[in-house]
Amino acid sequence: MFGISDPGIWLAYLLALACLLYSVWYGVTRWNKDDEDSTHLQNPKP
Image 1 (cartoon, rainbow, N blue to C red):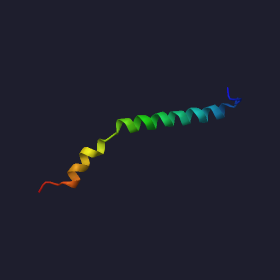
Image 2 (cartoon, helix red, strand yellow):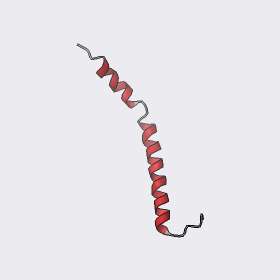
Image 3 (cartoon, one colour):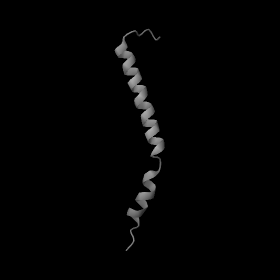
Image 4 (cartoon, one colour):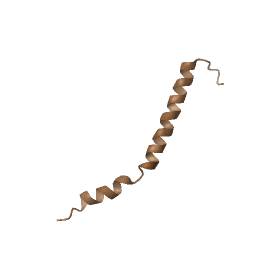
């Protein structure tokens, strides 16, 4: 496939795909999490 037979190249492709999937998962799970915490810092109660 793609003319690449070296296992090291396939490992690099798999690791890049794993990093991509992890970053998408991390971004989706952390979406707007800081918005709730930052409102307390902007408007502190006396």
